[in-house]
Length: 219
Image 1 (cartoon, rainbow, N blue to C red):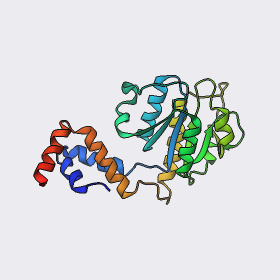
Image 2 (cartoon, rainbow, N blue to C red; image 1 turned 90 degrees about the horizontal axis):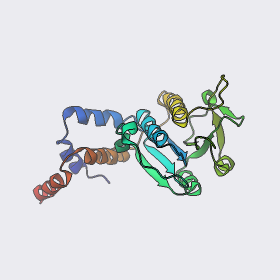
Image 3 (tube, rainbow, N blue to C red; image 1 turned 180 degrees about the horizontal axis):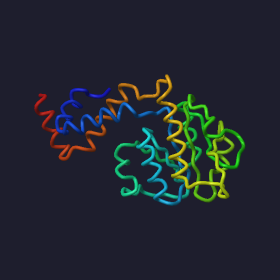
Image 4 (cartoon, helix red, strand yellow; image 1 turned 120 degrees about the horizontal axis):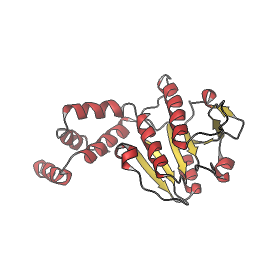
């Protein structure tokens, strides 16, 4: 359980605008949807997906690095790495198992399978959207494991979009519908408190000294 007194104490070190911003943003966060990227090669693509997760209120991003291991590009992520939780996996099998254990259906985003177009997607189901490598797309393991396939309608000669663009389009569509629904999509109160505490820790300078002072004053 989050130490509420500690949280309130630490928040006194934030500006009023920052406290208000945290409280506003946390109420828009969700784990009803999550995203997984599979061995994305271009660093800027993973960073841009993380940025889209932050923009559209997705709290967790899962990155599979079975072949390609990269760090987040801070300039492209624009600080999103501070606000979005990053789960790293060394195999697609482990990632699939992890998200399934949390009750997510596996949604494979691919333009090659005739199944569900984005506007017809059932957003009421807890879903993890998988995005594949820039040229090869998703692995056969994801395609074989997927509960459904999702595609973005396209009418041009090009049959695919950049992964970061695809993620942004999908997330904008499904989160907009989610927020207009009666589904309980927000984080639980405890999840909100824990995340606020995490954000405060990442924001305050001289955090260790402030914590030491807090416990000294609590004696």
